[in-house]
Amino acid sequence: MFVTTADGNGADTALQNDSQSGGTSTVVAGGFGNVPFRRSDDSRQKMLLVRFDISTLDSSSFADAVLRFDYNHNRLRTMRVYALAEDFDNWDESTTSYSNAPGILQPDQGGSAYDSAGNNFLDATELFFPGAPTPERPNPFQIGTIQLEDTRGLPGGRGVLISNPAALDLEPVLSADTNGLVSFLLFQDGSDTSQTGDIATKENAALLEPMLGVLPQTLIPEPTTALLAAIGLFGLGVRRR
Image (cartoon, rainbow, N blue to C red; front, top):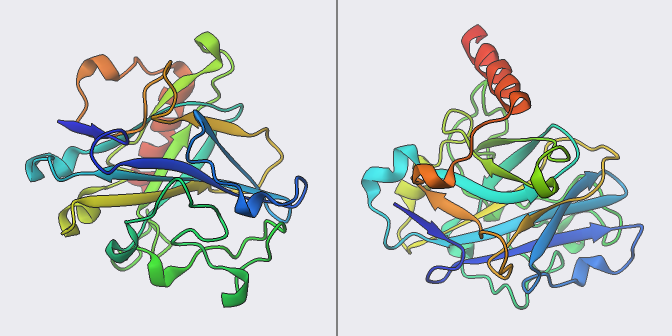
């Protein structure tokens, strides 16, 4: 059983703080069919903010729940995933931008200046706390990671991004919920000069919107060689720990 950002009170958007384009901190991307992601510290920061209405999900599915996105990107990269604290789930995608988004540390609170794309941008007071850090999850507020694949060789240059419960355990966030809503912030783990990637939203009529839950096999593509290699390396790292 799964839900999408198009179900109930779901939502999806991007948050941008870009020193090279100017003025992006107030850009509202809630109506975009594809929302961008990129990280180049001191230059460009583009991240994803998605919300799912989980009021219809059975709690028995939480342990095996995954995130699914239609996306494109030109590198093998890691996406860091954070969840918003429950009091901050009710944001409006039609008005939310980097300059007012929950979970973002604004300049007047000590965060990076607008249009600077600095590395100090998370407001820990508005993030879900999953517990003490572990070797697999060294950041105390990070709930996990998702591995990005280079999609340039795939049909249409697009791929399907599905989280691995071993690297992104969603059960603590889903089980702690009491208002039927969960929101996630996603951004690249490291700064680089690779081109901007994007994820399809519920406003995209040609592609599937973001999903959360236990997916039917028809929504899970066969893994490519590159993805299998990445998963193998992750598994090796876990075994070594």
